[in-house]
Image 1: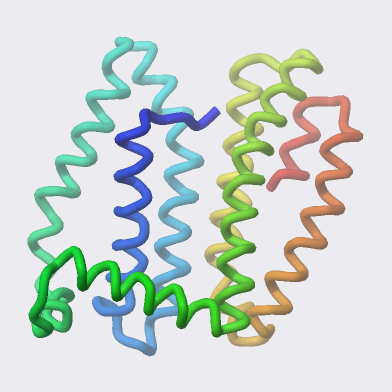
Image 2 (image 1 turned 60 degrees about the vertical axis):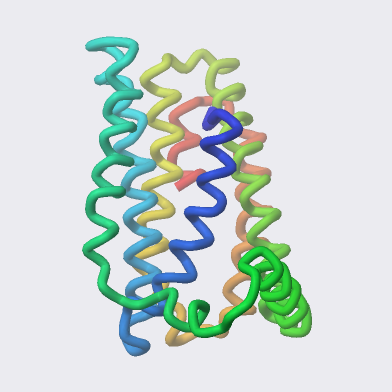
Length: 213
């Protein structure tokens, strides 16, 4: 199960929001769809490789996975200053107390998002999916162990979720050009509903792999 300490989880929320806000400023508008897809593919590739790498490092030492994780954050910290795009120029041009301005901008951003039907729908959808994925991950572990899966098989099943996410990220630009975004989101929800019924019916652990992929 994916868990983390409260300070790390809280910081991850801010990092994720800043990362998504910075991407359109760094990438040319004509390349944004591909860049978003590649970023999602990177995250899913990490989900595939992470459990196996973490298990191997844990076999060397209990502290090795945490040290490797700390080094990855250090690498990010060292390389971030090399981004030369002036992402703060627009905010710096407006004088005023920082906290007060931040609150006003948050209110304005939330109000604007609420007035956009697609963005409002997407925000609720993304929140629901994030909760659902955590529940699904725990459920898969419980089901796999109940049906006699080994630790390696359970890790393989969880890794298959990353394979599916990677394939979806690579296919996203083509879908974005051909299918309206709202239809894609709604279609995904119906497909997931059908597949969840398959997860509940499976009794052979490794048969979960093609379903969660």
